[in-house]
Image (cartoon, each protein chain N blue to C red):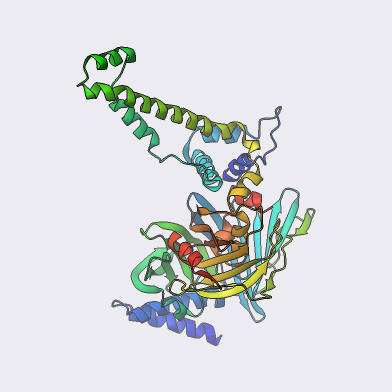
Amino acid sequence: MNEQISALMDGELALDAHDSTRLDPIFSAMKTGGESAESWATYHLIGDVMRGNPMFKPDFQQRMMQRLEKEATVLAPHASKKAIHHDDKNHKGLKMPAKWSIAASVAAVAFVGWMALQLPSQNIANITANEIAQNVPAEYLVAHQASASGNAAFYVQPASYSESAR
Amino acid sequence: MLRSFSTCALSLSFTLAFADQPTENEVWAVLQNAAQAAHSQNYQGVFTYQSGSSTKSVQIVHANQPHGEYARILVLDGSPREILSHGEDVIIYRSQDEKVIIEKRHRQNTFPALLPLDIDTLKAAYKARWGGIERIGGRDGQIVFLDSRDRYRYGYKFWADREYGLLLRSIMLNLHNEALEQITFNQLTFFNVTNMDWFHPNISRDKKYCMESTEPANKLMNQPAWTVTSLPVGFRKLEQSTHTMPGKSVPITHIIYSDGLAAVSLFVEPINKGIRPKIGHWVMGATHIHAGVSNNHQIMVVGEVPEATTIQIASAVRFNQ
């Protein structure tokens, strides 16, 4: 199954619009979570690391939600701005809109991040071996494994490695 | 015959001696025996290789014959891979789509022959520690820890068969004592070789065969304009060669260093005009890759070692003025 997930990511599975019988078992396996879903996530993480994409920490969502919860809910920002003019000593009030905009920008980043994470699953075939090979020094890894490395070289072939080694 | 007798006698003496806590020398002797057994014994079995979320089952048959050592290794999970080795020669058969790719390599230290035959070479960098007896796959395993003396390599935990010496299990531990890579025999039998019928690749004959086009690596022709100073303790140069890599016009100097267990590759090449050098760090399982630039050269270090080791080796390259 892992092999198929890896092949799917690399665009090696023949994607026939009229015949989804090869893909359906993979998708349903990944949807049920467990090892398949984990493999899917791990392979993408490897790909991200190899391509040098910035990554969120594992607890990003949690921390994001915590930050949002701490933010005061501003239902009418204009009203609060007016309040600041009226009361210059209220520094708390002054900070509030600024804070809100930070949270908003984080939310925007989160949205972009979410979009970026969604993209691979839609455009799997577009991630070519070249993209990966250009960033990770795969040719050096292959040369190392061919002459120096121990177990990993024999038994493990990450999706991108087998691609670039072709 | 004599050799196998002495091996038996040796392991017997351990079993008796280890009623008390064994001395460090005795612990080293367990590893020496394990290194020997991987080459001298006849065995077959199935082991599991685990690194990160990747797991592979591997079948191995190993025979020590008058004409040398023969082994057939078959990767049972994922894409079919078969490895046949005779002495120093290793041939890998890989099925891919409609063809079989054949690749030649030199013998490497792979499980269960992980340990160097000259165990003394490990003593500068590792400390051996006794860990007791534990049952692995129905056999008694003598546990030995190899702790790194510094932060430039990973540690190991080995289980060596009490009777035959062979490694039953091996775990590579990072600096926080977490497993990076684990290999365990699930099934193991020692046998007497009667025939060699098993020593052939079991690949379909109606597929096309093609040899992996590997550029011949030349022994170094001219002395490079740089030297390597101050390696981490225990690392020695094993091999130096020049490669021509696909898509590169200049030959790359490739040096392999090893401390007896961990291997590191150093690649140095002049940077061509118009080519953007790579800078950065990558991690894949236990393998670290460090890319840097020095004196208009691309320095690349790849190895199953901590990040600090790759940085140290990269910065040990000194250019002659």
